[in-house]
Image (cartoon, rainbow, N blue to C red; front, side, top):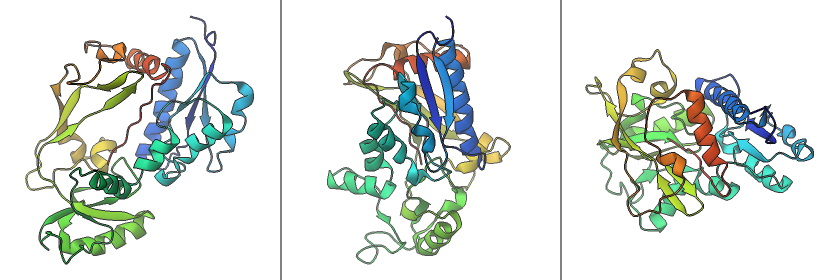
Length: 293
């Protein structure tokens, strides 16, 4: 199909080359743009600056949809909701989570408060390393994990992020100062770790294949997926874990939807896989977004 015959799509990111996770976003934007062009769309990358001025020219170009890959602005995850908010104000359709979803879930502490309000279990936590009601069941030697409130992708996290509860207060202060973003502590849950992704569709939710993170050769080190494990291929942490598929069946108790996401797994090119994913994400009403530690 001739490039551009199906209309114009803008691919947004606001990443820099300052960190490996940011570079990954730039590479993702390039892959999405290539796949869209192979699908017959006129696709163009728009790299946003912190003032988001690059959005103002989009309405005059009448994009079919804006492919939003912004999960941080200039490396700051707290600013990500500004992009869908601005797109809403401009009246442009876009992929990914809406502004409300971003605001409701971006803060890990805010999300935990919502879970607790609904009676759903979530590990005990502290925003400053001091535990309510004395210790609220948290022994000074109990393991807790210190993590950023607003950031994802395990920014700044490694096996030293797991520590005795008594050390959390100092660690929160030090890491907040170092990374210039708030941190908090929560009880560390030992056990198996799974990746479960959900895809929202017009007629329900599709549970995508579930994978377990298998930790190998960690000995006494904390079994967590830290920053190096995700973004530093030369790090021992990157190779000391693997993903094992544990379920690839239909979604139990949920409507079956989005047929392309249920296709049997098999060898294919990255471009082909991206095209299939894009075709589904652009179906009217589809919203999907990925968030992680």
